[in-house]
Length: 150
Image (cartoon, rainbow, N blue to C red; front, side, top):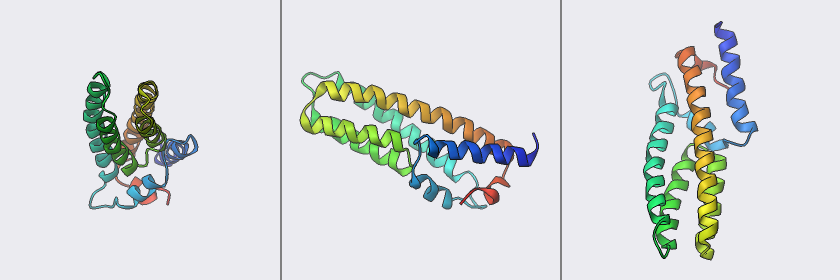
């Protein structure tokens, strides 16, 4: 694929992540930390975030199986999950975290279960989009850093 065409495709894919509400300004700030010295910085941070969130999902699943539910523990796990998601600009995931925490505060187990399922769907959808995006960026090579949108 021609480099200019690939670059346009990457830029369109990136913009669609914002247009569809998957990402917010925090992702732009993360991109601004990437430079020639660390050309894979954004991908590495996102990968670390997903590894961390996988562990938190397992903790949340275990906590949601307890009876009675420990809403303080659930809220604590979700606060960590929200912080991790916020660091990469995962807007939809962060919104589900906020909603989950509200259900914890009100003591709604049903709300927590429902929101947790939605959170996992949003996390997976964004993960798949990130994987496609970073794969294209790897195809384009290091010159993509200089041509990324501001």
